[in-house]
Amino acid sequence: MDEIVVEVAWREGSRVRVESCRLPAGATVADALQVVGAPREAAVGIFGRVVEADTVLCCADRVEVYEALPNDPKLARRERARQARRR
Image (cartoon, rainbow, N blue to C red):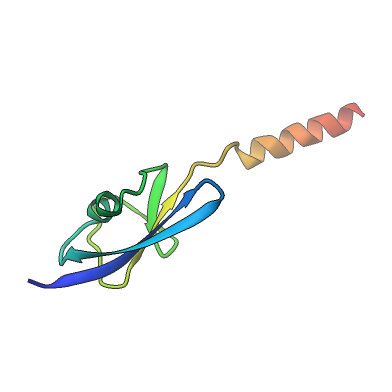
């Protein structure tokens, strides 16, 4: 049976955690997240490209767990402009 080795990266507090794991060929992003115990946040990707959890992995892929932004940058910019006008 063929195996692949992939990395999974996610943030824990102020640190980034990176774990390697061996999976059977044909394993998916969801399988890798489950094996290393990574949280499933807003989105996941492979090398910066957002993918679905059922995406099949290739050897040496790096799965990245993304977090939702704490606030919408566009709305924050509008609010700062609104406050600046009040001054």
